Length: 80
Image 1 (spheres, rainbow, N blue to C red):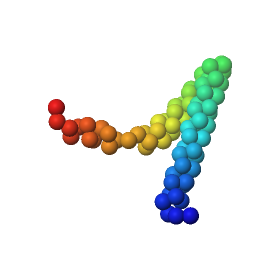
Image 2: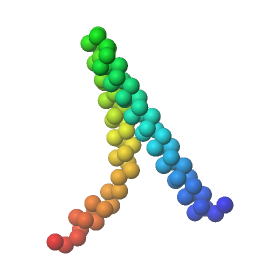
Image 3: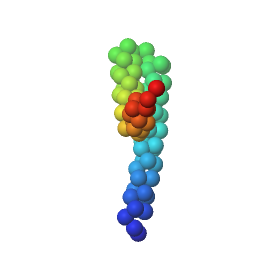
Image 4: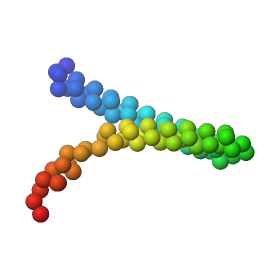
């Protein structure tokens, strides 16, 4: 296998793993929110909401790394 082909396959695998992670974290956040909604104990509710926030933050962090900032950089350098 040529280095370019291997790099392409590894990048594709990384993208699949990131997608799997994002889906899992979103499902986890949703589960925490479901439990927060039905629990009667305020400290348990707050802990579940906080855990949902942590899962959300992890997803936001992963997705922020996926954003192509070069388009914004180039746009700022264009005249007019």
